[in-house]
Every structure is written in C-alpha cells, then in structure tokens.
Image (cartoon, rainbow over all chains, first blue to last red; front, top):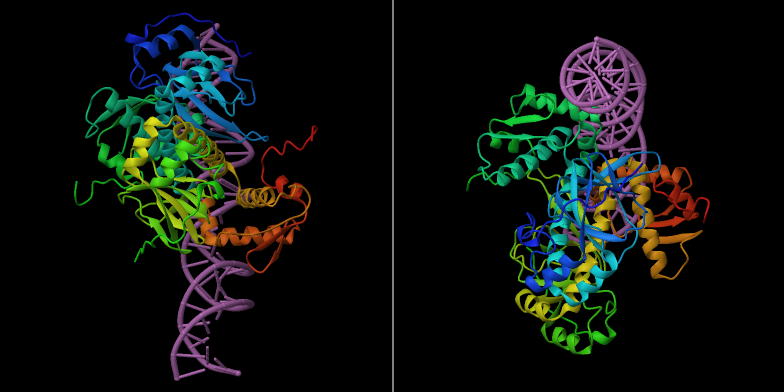
Length: 248
Length: 248
DNA sequence: CGTTATTTTGAATCGCTTCAAGTGGTGTGG
DNA sequence: CCACACCACTTGAAGCGATTCAAAATAACG
C-alpha cells in the first residue's frame, strides 16, 4: 500500500516558496547551507498516507506544496482531525521517534525532509531554528484551542460556517484580495474530511452546506467550487466575535 | 473586582517544588540566578480571575502551586475550557502582550512571575529557556489534540470517564501509587467547570457521574471525593486504546 | 457508457440539552 | 438555635439537533 515516492525535484532554498514562513525562516545563509546539505524532497499523491500513527519517524519535514491532514482514530473507527497542514507547516517532533498521528495527503504533496538525528543535532547549535519552531508551535497551539471551542460549543451550522470562513480567509490573503465582499474558492476537502475536521457526520455536513446555500450565505457550482457573495454574512454565521460591532 | 494580591512568600529556586519541571528546568546555576533576580510571586484565591482575555499582560509566569483554568467565551456566554494549568505549567506567551484566554484560579494559586520584556530579552541569550519552553509547548499541543478527539468524537460517558482517568492518573503518580487497582482522589473542579472542560452541560455531567456510580465504576463520598475500585474498569469506559490488551 | 465514489436527501431514532423542581450542605442573621 | 437564603448538585420530563440507516442523485473514471 503506502508507497513512498522518491525525490523528484530539488529546490534552491533562496527560491523556495516557503523560505520565509517555514522552520528555516530565521536562518541566515550559513545556517541555510547546513540545512540544504541534509535536506531531500518527497512527494505523495492525493489520498496517500504519509505516516501512520505509531510508525517510527526517521525524519521531520516542512510542507512545501499541497495540503495534508493530521488525524487520530479510535479503535472502533471514529476519527478526529487534529490539524491541517498547509505549505510551510512543520511535520514531526524533534526528540520523538514515533508518529503520534496519521498524516494523509489530501492533494498532491511535496515535503522538504530532514533526517531526524542530524536535524536535532543542528538544532542544538542553531538557536534560530528552535526559536522559529517555538513560534510556530505556539501558533499551532492557539489554532488547536480555537478548534476546541468549535468542537465543544458550536452548532453544526456554526462549525461549517467557521470552516468555510477559514478557507475563504486563507485564499483571500493568498490572492491578495481583501476579505470583504465577494470571495471565491475551491474546497480542498471532501465532505467526509470536513466531517472529521468538525466532529460531525458527513450527512450533517452536506445538510448544513445545503442550508447555507438555501439561505443565500454561499453559492455552489459543482460540489467544491464556492462563492461567498458577502463575507460579513458568512462571518455572522460562525458565532465568533466579528469585531465588526460598534467600533469597526 | 479582580484584586491582584501582592507577593507574600519568597522561595529559593533550589528548593522550589517545580524546579525540575518548569520553564527553568534546564537552566544551570548562573542562568537561574538571572531568573531569580527578576522573579516575584503572586497568589490568588480560589475563584479569582487572574487575567481576562484581551487584557494587556506585562508578565509571564509559572504555576507553583494550585490549579487554574484557561478558557474561551463566546458573546452569548457559551464557554469552553481550553487548558488546565497545573503546577509547573507556563502562563503567557513571549512576544504577545494581550492575553488570549481567561485565566481563573480554581484553587488557591501561587505563581512565579517574570516581567515580560526582561524575560524575553533573557530568552534571547539563554537557549535553555527556549528549549524547555518548546518541549512544554509541544506537550501542551499534544494534550490539546487529545482533547480535540474527546470533544469531537467521544460520548458524554466517555468524556467523564476520560476526565476522571486523567485526574486519577495524575494523583496516582503524584502520590507514587501504581495506577492499577484502587485509586482515591478529590475532584478539583465543580460540575460546571467539568462541563466547560468537556463540552457538555452541567446536568449531563451530573447524570453521567451518577450513572458511573450506579454501574460500580466509581464510588462517591460527598460530591467531590472519588474512589475508583478498579482503574482498568474506568479505563475501559474512556474509549481510548487501553494498550492493556495482549501485551500488558 | 457502465461502474464506482461522492454527495444529497429523507425518515426514524437517539443522546444531549433545556427547563423545571427538588435535595443537601453551609453560612448568616434574627 | 432555628429560619432563611444561597450554592453546588441531582433528578425528571419534554424538546431538539445531530446521528443512523436507507435510498436516490450527481459527479468522476476507466
């Protein structure tokens, strides 16, 4: 089953699309050279499993391109996604040799890998890497905690609206479009993946998306192409503090 | 309202109960001295709010004694606990001046505080602090992700059993009792706090605790004193992989 | 063009919440 | 010392939101 594709490309760090957001962001040219010497690339097809929870992990990596999911599964099959890995996100934990979660590519995925031991040694002598990793981990912790609020307290409709808002916002900033008014994007996740993300069933996800469409909050073209005519309207549905109250 | 009590005690770092688990764990004597020079203590009464989300935080701190909760609240009052702060846990985020969550003392609480700016400067030159903070943050992230599985996929009964198991396990290791067979402890949380932790209502918490008692999984003396006659029995109810299967 | 995977929709059921009433323990003031 | 209020908690009954099971519709694929 889980084929691991061999390295295909080689990217120069200077022209790397995630150069300034990944774990290497703070590194100077010297440090970058050391990293470049030990790096190698791997690519995975959409749907391929990168690592199973419990597997030994001999490497850590940065997502260069594509999207992957981090998820946990109970014995009886119930699964919960606990993280969404986007370009520049870091995979693996220094100092741990067993994967704690399943990592699955949801699109074609390219990762910049480092063998774990050399990377850990480099980290000892290169504060910039540890510093950046701390920042990134703190950001992930914040994201996880926001997700806990969603999982514990939001209704199905609010959950869907929140997910759509996150994707819309990310796409908007990526394309340098102000996230006001109209936003258009493609869903990178299946209904089932959304359900795993939101702690719902795929039927409920489908129903709530239909409901948001019926109510004019979103428009659909096919299953995956979404138009949000009024971003503020979508944000109203998330249950979050829009900030758009008195002082906006 | 929110009175901040002034420093009362002064603890020598060498005899500090959290010396080897807190953010200062990896520091040598020199580094410890620098920290000791800038530290001060604060205590809060049970129920007191330490910080409101959005407040400016001029300090970071380690919990020395007592328990506090981290929680998020929506406009309409729904609240979700996103962290439980136990002795040695770290409060605040270097590089951020606004609190992201409400911090409330659930028991009498003592914290070892550092003004944020000097602490951040010290971190620049003291890799040991940043390294330890990274470890701790990664642990917290793992805990948060386990909590996401609980919030998203577990039933009310499993949620309660999981919470009881966590507290029982912590108390058992603290008192050096093997977490097999019988375990006795006191609940440090009200039913409402448990509900906020588990994404339930306090009525459901009460009902499920009663159900576990009826089924002989736990025994209750008063509202807070819990006896678990057979730890394995409780673990069976959590829905987790007990690992206690074939190889235990 | 038929086959398979994904998604939508419907109907019945279930688990948790909501609303409401009641219990037991603790502290306070008459 | 008792009446009273207050708080944390328990229990009951009704309602509702999400799930479950089932079937049909749509899109994707060889």
